[in-house]
Length: 481
Image (cartoon, rainbow, N blue to C red; front, side, top):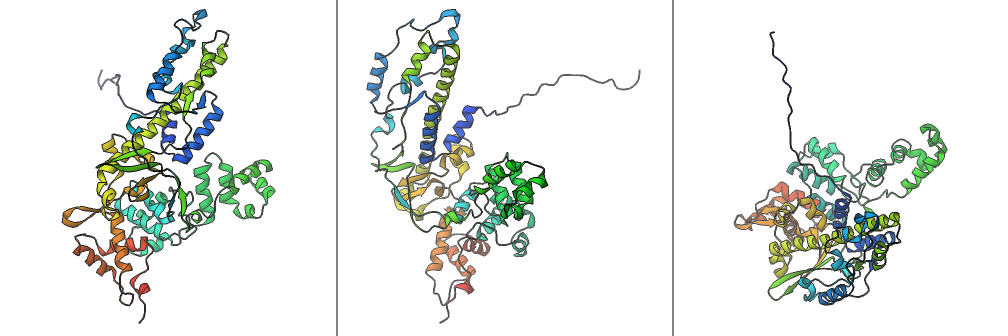
């Protein structure tokens, strides 16, 4: 028989796939919380999980071990009838967590002797909307062309956070391609606050609904197609058009009412605000030490009373299973809180090594530093570092700074070295502040002065950074004699 016979075989392929377990999901979310948010989360967990208790006293490590030894159960005291050994408390693989958390916790020896600053509220100047967005942009992965277009988009936002220039107008400047501007807009619209860089209120609300209530398609449809009727409270008309109950429309409207049609306004308060640093970087001798601010955070322990319920023979199987689940959940939370602390410490230790000159001498010595570089040094994914520094502040000898402030792109500096993008902007701003208002510097002159200092940038770069800082053009700054 002619022709090729079909060949049947079995091919095996090995591939790695990451599965997000509930514990991992919680770990990721806990890491991204700042101190105030963590405190709120712990309070909520203590309400929902009776196994968690707040520790009223803090004992030394030696005192903790003494109490644990004194209260260890007698061998054989656990009920094992019906052969159900898996229900015994000792069969639960809780590791050493009972040693540390069943009774009062203890201060870590690594941080016990560090002299901490008083963790009271600190005054800090609030970030502008542009600052807030630029920090997120510097942490984003995109091409340089898209990044440049994104900076221009941020520079064209009004106080409410809306984009005031059309994409076509931005392309007509000759600095960007339409494809890059479109990608940049999609990127910036993913940033916080939700709804930023929208072109009208409809787009603003739809973006917020996608972010804050992704499951509510009815609310998005109402905003997209019935905004006028929504403004006029014509809910019955909307319900008839969508063939939905009026009650469903009213529930969707309640969600829409919670949205913010002016997302940029929260960054327009010029008053200094009180913040609590999440970490302190303090000098001890010739070295710097990191201390995580845990003042005011509930110190957690596991409940003795619920442990005894597992050990008592009269406890029903359903109750035992419930209590075991609560113990597992409580221990996972304690592990995640400790993991958050250790990750923040490791990231800050890298910041100390890389930004030693800043800590010693001040902001003029801030070095360029990328999220990816710190992640490689810590041994984690860049997204882990991004979450570890998100919305967190550090007390340093130079003042209180947002942790993201330490991350900045490199610009070629003196002797082929690098200077941070933040420093470059500060230099441009300082030159313009010191110029003769009758004969203000042109972008070309600022570029030439920077090159004299060994910083190799183009005129277009200087113009872009000037626009990012909302500094008017030479013509607009000129004061007639």
